[in-house]
Length: 277
Image (cartoon, rainbow, N blue to C red; front, side, top):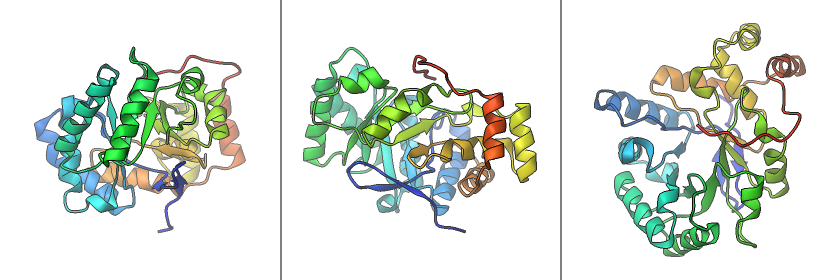
């Protein structure tokens, strides 16, 4: 197995380009053991960036993550997110303490604003910086922020990532956001990289997959991972699914493959509003 590719954040931290998402985990107690097992399998395969949020299952996903990383916390890069309704100075601190408690850890490696709300970004960032000084979080970033939102961040501050919806059917970020993030040297973190499975029956995707002896999900994931500065965080709830995702990390798509996918999923020709799920 080749060494997995990493993406370097602005603060110098190198993280795996392929991580693990947890949206939907913790909501069914009957699936908990399988979810924990899947996350642990992903860690074993080098997918040591784990993304979660206080919103997922009202904190239950963070508890699943805590169980999965128990005994190997130092090997994991933990990402969690604060709701915009908690993004004021006092709320950020309280939310972070709640996440730390559920995650059973003393620090979060990367703490994101889940999306922009009514709290001024300057207040949120100041609260994040305070948590960095305290050691509760190692760094901070944003999620679902478009170009104009990034411009509203306080001067002389830079998020470690912007986590956005990006996949073959959601290519809007390519027009303005990805280029702007590259100018700022901010990696993008792509959530729902296979559109929660809705992409997988597409004829063009299946055709490219067949040519590679791969699955449509692997091609969709490899397409996102073709960027050197994009991190993908698909969710998988079984070891087989984890192994399927892991194999996509080493796939190379040809110019012909990319052209076929462009025909089926045209790149944006102008600015589109940033989409969310």
